[in-house]
Amino acid sequence: MAEPTSPPPRIGTPRWDRELAGIGLNRLSVDTDVGLALEFADVHAEFDPHALDFGTDAEAAAIWVLLHQRFPSYGILMYLRMCWSNGDHVLQDWIVRQFAAMLVHGPGPVAESAEYGLWVDYFESSEAAQVFTALTLQMPRSHWDRLISGAGPVPWEAKHHVFQEAAEDPALHPALAKGLAGSFYDVYGQVDAVEAAALVERITVADEDLLEALTEAVTQPLRLRTGSAVIVDESDPGWPHEGSFLLRAVVRSPRSRWVGRSELVADGQMYGRLVHWDFPFDAAKIVHRTVHAPEPEGRIVLFRVEGPVEHAESLVNRDVEAWPPGLREHLTP
Image (cartoon, rainbow, N blue to C red; front, side, top):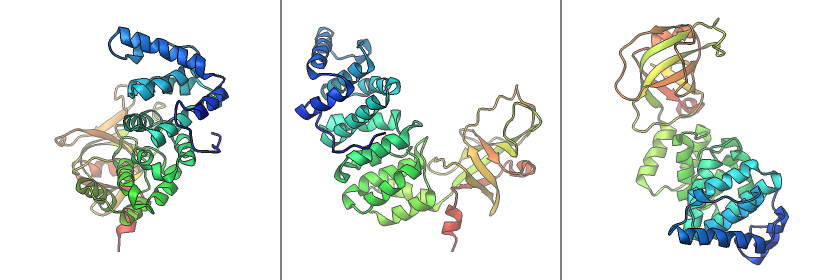
């Protein structure tokens, strides 16, 4: 993505109109289409974005942005994401700039909607790093709160320097605490637990529940109770994961979290690394054998463990721990 040369203009202002020309549009024609959409909304008593259809991706994007200022909702941002997916780099840069404008200028409901839209549609995608970086480059640090609070799924390499800078500003500590918690607890959260632990020590977290969750994440393993294990015949062509096995387990910690490649530890000994949560295994299609054990109560998660297959039998029906990479050593005196 191209680096911006100035902060984004407020949506709908004359400066915004001039930037609109950069994607080949003029404000008058866009306003005409917005007016038609508003007439349709008046006829139907409420605004329903799902019933609308516009022209090119650029035209649709501009209309959705203006409508979102009036009717902030994820329904509109979902269609804006479609324009982003179909657009060229120029349109994608323009759309990301609109999110920066929403977060910087608001108003509140617009910024809140944009924060959610970024988290769901961009930060959980393969483009998360480039979108997040582009936003940080064109937003004043004083407006980073809504950006970093939802950055849990953003790759750690893309956000850690932003998090470190935010730690220097006490006004951003509440948002940073949420972003760190999301890095551990979001379904697609990404984190370096050791670096996150150092950040937690640097910031003030007033929310007691949030502080408890962060303290647990940076000082404790994820505790699991295992059930059965599945050992796959590695000669089966449908199994591309040599040197790994499957382990059924239930989370016993107060809060569930996932950090890829966590160390699987039992009684102080490391047996492998957890590399996949809820592994999609079709027992009917792959040759395997099951090491049966009583199934623990609760939601069973099928983990893929990267490690010596001969360890599988010794790991059934046990209390085990999952330590994020490096954290166990970091906490060892």
